[in-house]
Length: 354
Image (cartoon, rainbow, N blue to C red; front, side):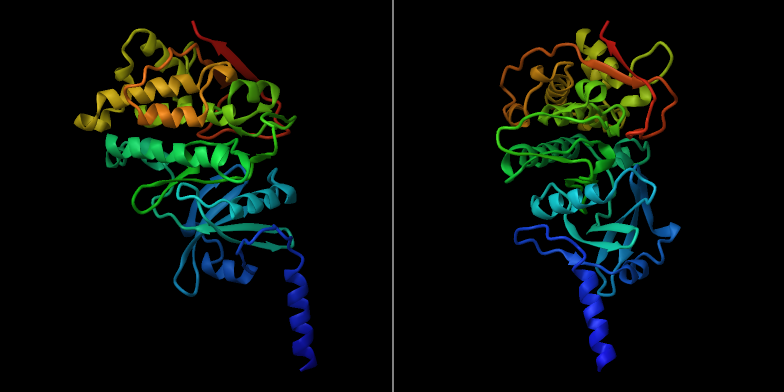
């Protein structure tokens, strides 16, 4: 009996080592053995993807519930504070276009987040895959764009907090069983309070091709940084091409390519050929126009997500002409997703429109 009571006290003590995230938030604390069993000891067959801060695995609990486990790399740049940040943020966010956090696991050096499992994985696995791209016709892509808008609008304006995601990209938009989008990965998100509308950091983190120029070059971030990333994402959804896919000598990337076509009044030439006859030309041109407004070089020129939501739902509205975008790319070979951390000395170049 005494041994049993001591065991209970130890278990209780270990549980209390977690933190109080505040509010009436119901989060489950998973122990390591439960997660290990659910993921079959983090087997390769259960691996869903890998990012700058760790690996995501599919898991199945004893009750049959499927989960997604984000196992943070012990050598990654995400420390305890960023882990707390992600847990605290996501736990308090409730929106149909945001991924739902079920709980977390913290054991010695192991830090894991447990999310709802979304069987269709990321948006990138569709729009950048020639064999799967046709599964998203134009109607569905437009719905996905609108869903992302709703999610960002909630983060920027409608939640109790003003939140800057800072790493919006195709692989961080997950699709549920009905192909509805859910924004994921809040490890780099920042909260703004009161009248605060801009922040600055010496540690630039994010993904090349999606970072706004003021953030990449000066560490300045705001809601307009997310707007820039959204604009890039819209152009990728329309074209089926990655922004960095145009990284060739003496060439520009997707933003520059679309800008050239826009000036020539040939913007429809960028449309993904897999869309076939499902394309609604007026909606596509509207999305391209909005996308180009979002990637303008100066943050002050970009619309807010409130503006974007209005423009996409009021097709007869006369939109302003976009100013030139900023073309950002690394001066080194770049992989599929190039994440930047505090110790990265590689150069970033701003190319101005011709």
